[in-house]
Amino acid sequence: MEWRCDVDDYAVEIPPMIIITFLENVFKYGVSAQDDCMISIRIEVKDGVLEFNTRNRVMKRVDEFRTEAPVGIENCRARLDCLFPSGYYLKAGEYEGIYKVNLKINLS
Image (tube, rainbow, N blue to C red; front, top):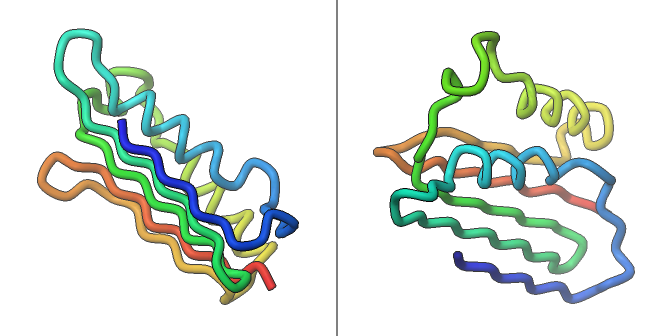
């Protein structure tokens, strides 16, 4: 596991529950007891901008857990739309077996 946290202002407030879904997904879909796992989590707050990135090898697929479409990321996107209209960037998806999340929020 790779973990990096760089924060220039510890007084900055990040809305609750925004990044929890992404962290849960890293461990839910990116961890295996049988195979080597690769997980990377990086959070940076600089000049009022939060940048949050995760990367994990896809070890499990959503269909192993449920049949309905996943709603976690869509719910996060809806919350971000309400809290930071046009003040955030979110890209999440799988590329060549690696699931990546890139979230940037202008907190100021």
